[in-house]
Length: 271
Image (cartoon, rainbow, N blue to C red):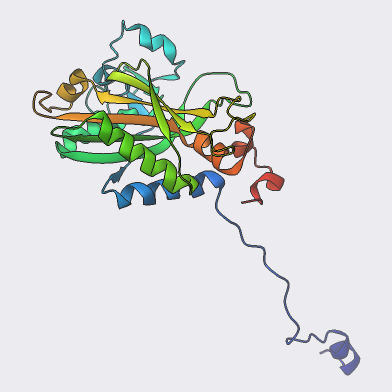
């Protein structure tokens, strides 16, 4: 049993303020992803998810990229050999699987499930077998958008993309379209946005041009619509895709993509 002097030495004043518990906060990529989800929900888009380990069919063939297509060389891919029967379409024992190279793998899956008309975005991780530097990573995130209905045109695409950029960057922006090649759209487009740092006047970020290349897009190729069991003579659609890291780097002025996965608290505590 403790004596009186020992009890006095162990005295603790419960009225003193406690030590502040430092709480965590959301990663900048999570902040941007949630902003994007809110923007597209406000326009009536569904938020979809898809498998990161995907079949060759949904990642390539259903998107108008057959095995012999030269577009396969545009993406350095992680292939995985399956040793089990997963009972999924186009996936069976000893079939090569792929870590998805884009969230476009959700396109045909969504068409098969929901049909037309449809509007949806898919956000998530994608994987590329490439060397890392300030602007390239082997694992990053992408948002893929698709809208299918009757009489869809590039005007609809431009309106949706402008709404996305204005909502994300909280300022008025202009966009312009240049021809580009992507096998799952026809025509294919490169979309550029007026620089949010200099308002199009020219700076180091936009290389003095006033424009920043943001994403690839276009009207959904008829072969992709057919793969999703949708009649291309009745329905048209647009699709677009871009890296969420790219959007975040412009939003927060980040100059190195490797910082997102670095675990550096000096970087992360700024957000």
